[in-house]
Amino acid sequence: MTNRLKQIYDRGKDYIDYQLGTAGAVVMGGIVGLVNSSEGALGATTAALKQGAYTFLIGGTVCKATERIAQSRIKNNLLAITLAATIPATATIAATYGVHKLKGTPKPLRSTVPTMIIAPLGLAGLAIIKRRRYQKENQNE
Image 1 (cartoon, rainbow, N blue to C red):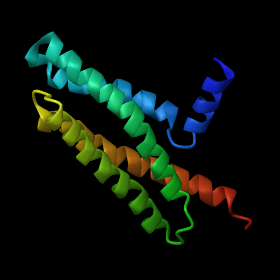
Image 2 (image 1 turned 120 degrees about the horizontal axis):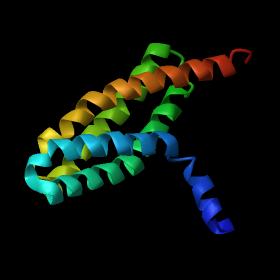
Image 3 (image 1 turned 45 degrees about the vertical axis):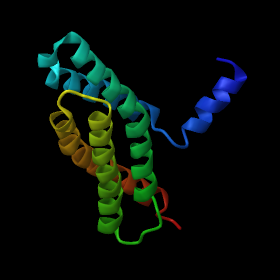
Image 4 (image 1 turned 90 degrees about the vertical axis):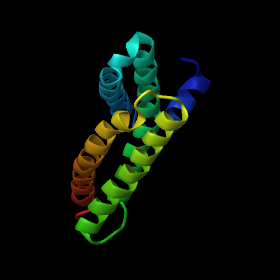
């Protein structure tokens, strides 16, 4: 990797959680491919690839936003965790449906249902983990 690409990659870590974005892309792309399998290989593959790319970029960004909100200076733990999960989850559900609807996914609502289930639960878990880590690191302040 050239020095410039390394700089871009490293700077991207401030905004995208690459590890969670990649894991989400594989899981969600696979689910959406299966949901659209009745539309034939081309329809299912197109939907899966769109979902995978979207989940990597947006999902990775949403996970980073969840982390930042969870680790914010909000004093009330329940409020911090709730905001860290619900704000990014709502945004990602709306954006996922919009991408599928606007880009011609054969079954946009059915393709969004996995996100409606997984995003709030996953982001709540991530928010709890990040909040606990934040509290532990900032105990002595």
